[in-house]
Image 1 (cartoon, helix red, strand yellow):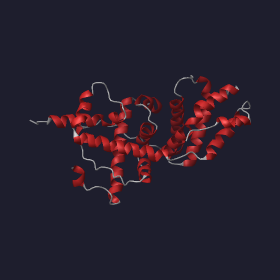
Image 2 (cartoon, chains in turn cyan, orange):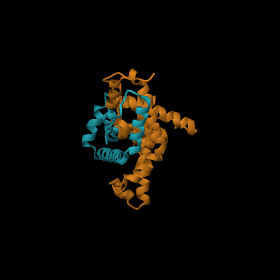
Image 3 (spheres, chains in turn yellow, orange):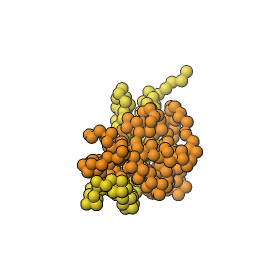
Image 4 (cartoon, one colour):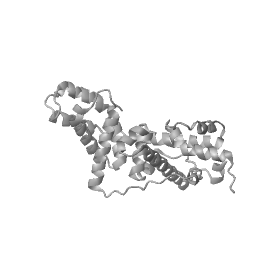
Length: 97
Length: 184
């Protein structure tokens, strides 16, 4: 008969939820998995490493900026398609950075 | 018929254009081609503008724009590629506790982008929407057209593949920690 270490059982349970925890999407009834994190060094380290990768992806992708010609093309598209939009409305096109 | 009132144009610009950069970034990594990404974002804006009379003010315009973009990307893929989907697989306990080498701090942004672009498109899609755009699982499920459980499964598997690729790059570059160190 296999004897499962209760700590390992909680580790398994937390690691099933680790991505959801990272995304603030923990399901109801998963409180025990969250409590486990407060005293499990191994799971805390897993969480920290996954958070680091998530942040690295976010940072790397967000460095990309749309080229100015895309904004110009969108403006042109709307001016061409909508005669009610005057050239003085161009200032309204202010995308975030 | 296109909406034509000046106020509607202004409303559309105010609601939709602030998301242009985020839409472009997402498109670039979904199709891995900057020129195609520009065309897709333009097409998404055109479709959104045509449908703007159906958009309910006060609802989430950003999620609406992303849903239109994802749809455009689907059409693009169908047109140009014979895309293979990744079979969905349930998690196993063996998988959840399997050892994974840690990702080195020395990994560069360029390595992260190469690893991301190398993932199957279903995984890349949910990672971009969750990690970069920070949409809720419910919103991603609605955009991608799959159940929330599938979003979670793709995220988990995609992130795992990403970590393994990044650890591999670090190891190849001689900057990763040794296996023994990382187990401590």
